[in-house]
Length: 373
Image (cartoon, rainbow, N blue to C red; front, side, top):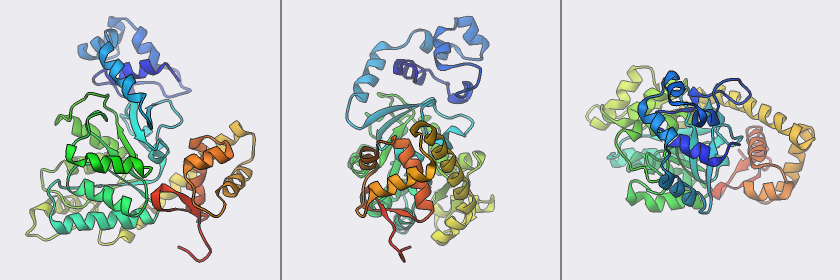
């Protein structure tokens, strides 16, 4: 990986995204190149004056702040060329150059469903979001949302009730939890093997124009986006639009014609979103995508076997033996097997989709017992 300071500098250059760089293994512009190019050469690449200024004259005090934050526990920088970078997010047209992560990095590559909606939902909407999140999480999906008040928070809490992973994508630096009233929820997410993630560096305030940027990460991480309640001008509709543009499924729960919080969902349904009445409606639509993710996971595990010098079946047997009969975390399995965390996460995904293991309370994995579904 390039020097972390290179990635931190790029993360602070406005307007840059990974779609402007060469993918690993391809010829073209690379991260370090941007810091070495002259101003005229950078301008010829289409970069604006503010971007060029940030590249040529980095804010050393701000970069030092990023490094201090990263020195804290359970914090990590995940650059675009890292094996830990979530593959679904990498496939969108404008993936972030860098992800600032607190909590489980492996959770970012789990199959996810985004649940979004109004910050001021009805009590029924809040309960619906939490119940759907809990049920979907118990069925094996990680729940992704934006830590906002209302539907977002209900989605996170539903996943936590299921003892499953939940990913909170913030529209500010991770040193500035927003809204502050959800700071306790953020701590609970990290404590339960969930993840806080942002592509914005430390010290970045929660400004209005940061949230569409945040929303494209929510939808980009996820197989699909479920909108529970949303007014016609809701930011959740931006997330739904971005999901559609990224080739992901869009789901919406209908409501009363008298409820203004249902109008955004009704508009989405008229535009082609899948009407959802039960969780089975979601799994029916996600079946093909889950099969595709399974194929990707198999390919990643096959790549990993070159590193470990073992055939894939043998690696799976080692992992299952290490799991034994009691639930264990990914970190525990890494320690027991010596495999890399991303390889363990990939193999667990395969084994989970094969029905051999199941995610349990607290983000642990255990063997699926005969007759259990």
